[in-house]
Image (cartoon, rainbow, N blue to C red; front, side, top):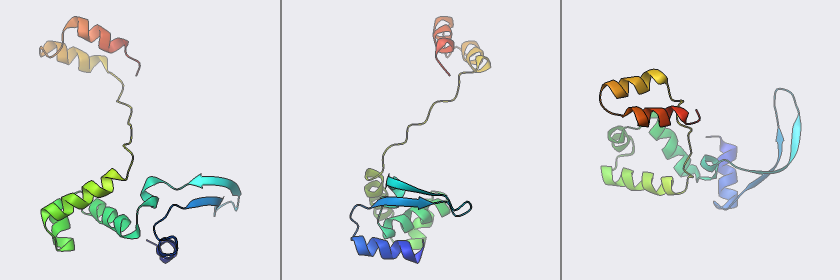
Length: 123
């Protein structure tokens, strides 16, 4: 995390921040308006560091315990606290493939009528 961002976090005391100007460094094009920071950027500097470490540890709580020198429940509690501050990201399900549906019918996991309905769903 950059020192500028940490300084900004200290300056705002963790309060909400609104960006009013964005400049693309490659083209020099600037856009002015009101821009909300992404959810991860709204976390405290310490929580951003924690999330970055969690990603670097490939989500291994055991590695996080060693890295931070704290217990499993401490890591879980912090993850839960941070997670409660982040919106749930909706991900579109992958498109239904006829071959997958046929395999489910063959294995008895789905009826033909269910397969027809499933294939009618929008991808």
